[in-house]
Structures are given as structure tokens and as C-alpha cells.
Length: 141
Image 1 (cartoon, rainbow, N blue to C red):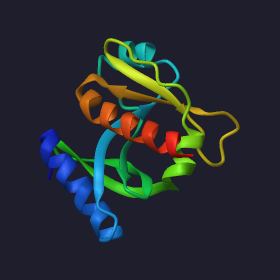
Image 2: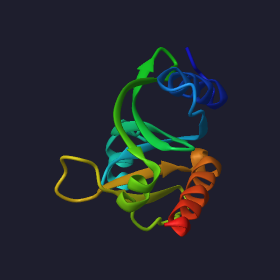
Image 3: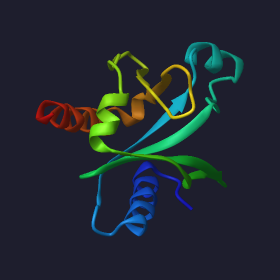
Image 4: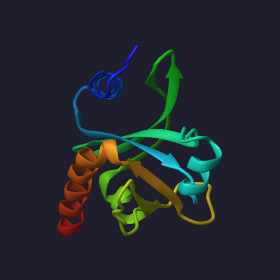
């Protein structure tokens, strides 16, 4: 069971390696889906329990795994979405960096409009690496 961030990242990376050993994970970060995170935070007493995912970038793909809470930690659950990197670049909108969390719209299959993905402050370093890497992929198009 993962309790710390490093242990959680290791478990997500292991899950991705099991999916395709030839495409190792490069970056892992967490997102929660909510159009109004401030309101959710107030109503939940600070516990943001909206839909949450681990996003993993590999050299070829971007994967979204559902977060499964277990005991004191979080583990990667089912694979919900998987995109090739160019497809992920096309689906991702402009990043908005804010004090407590950053956000970006992402067009998920089956949704009429892009979904707001929120990235907590604790994942900022990993998210910055992810966006820099995707910017490089977008520049190659």
C-alpha cells in the first residue's frame, strides 16, 4: 500500500511497465476533475474527493488510471484512457498555473466539452516536467 508520494509514483510506474515493458514511464502526476475546486474544497472540509486520476507520460503514450484509495494511501486502479502522445497534445488546452493548483482542459472521449483537470500543488514539479515534454512533442508536429 502506498502512503507517500514516492511510493505511489512507484506503484503507478510499475502498473504502466506491466502494460508495456518497452514503453517505460517518464512522468507521473495526479489530477482531480472538478469545474469549481474552491467550492468542492469548502464543501468537503478540504478533502478533495472529486474524480481523481494518475496521469502517466511515456515516450509514446499518455495514460489515465483511476485512483483507488486503499487504507491510508492511493493506488492505481483501472486504466480509463490511453492516448498516443500526439493525440494527447491535440486534446490538451492551455495550462493555467495558480497558487494552490494548476488546471488545464483536456478533451476526454465521450464528453461534449473539454474536462477541467486540476493539479494540486504537491504534483507541480511532475506536472511541469509533463507539460515541458508535451510542448516538445507539439513543436515536433
